[in-house]
Length: 289
Ligand code: G1P
View 1 (tube, helix red, strand yellow):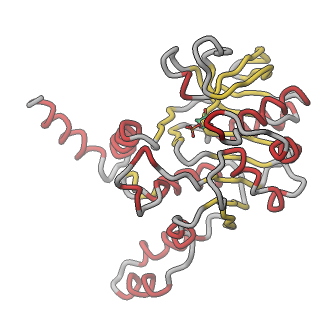
View 2: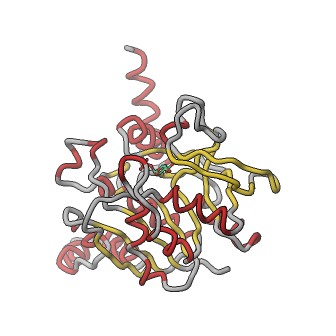
């Protein structure tokens, strides 16, 4: 199994981050000095992805502009001695082949992924959710692709979460295969405490096979009246083997304010340009708390 293509669903309304996201797509909010979306794209590219389809909507034009060339700005930078910055803008635009499709109705994650059918054709593909930003040694998507290749199966990525948190995610019934890798026996979306299958939540990263498209087309609306990817995955794991990777990473949910702030602080602390200054700044401020 070779995974070359990725789908990034980015057609959500961003209601958890209003008012900032009323006119700026949540994927374009800056985390330190880059939009959230760039972190996702970099993880995909570092995992071997070449072609990326972003599922957008009518309010998200800023995303395709970001991965386009901007000659006027580049000339201005070059003429004022800032070649480095100009080169960096080109590097970002050239990181991958970018494609876009609109999800014309907001009908859920499963419906968004189903828009990718003709782009994907008959290949396995990755899905990366834009809210889930990872800090890890080995890219999280690469951890999934390695397991998908080894078991020649679709693969979902996640982590164990608390009893209080599991209801916000999908929960899974698992059977251990090896360290951090499991067979998925069952999966359900946002379970009540009674419905919970385990505390292992699938979060933000998937390697899927094209048979998911027929499944999604036949999947009725589930939680919140939306077509849920999780419901499709549950059918998939009863049709063929599907594995799960307990990924080795710190995960940030940048779709809510606390997660966004935590990611901002942690990434800025790690950045040599801002880290030492920010550490001092936080220490100084903490004295008065
Ligand atoms: C989505 C998925 C859910 C997953 C979560 C975190 O939910 O539907 O299965 O666990 O992302 O990746 P959302 O956070 O969009 O409500």
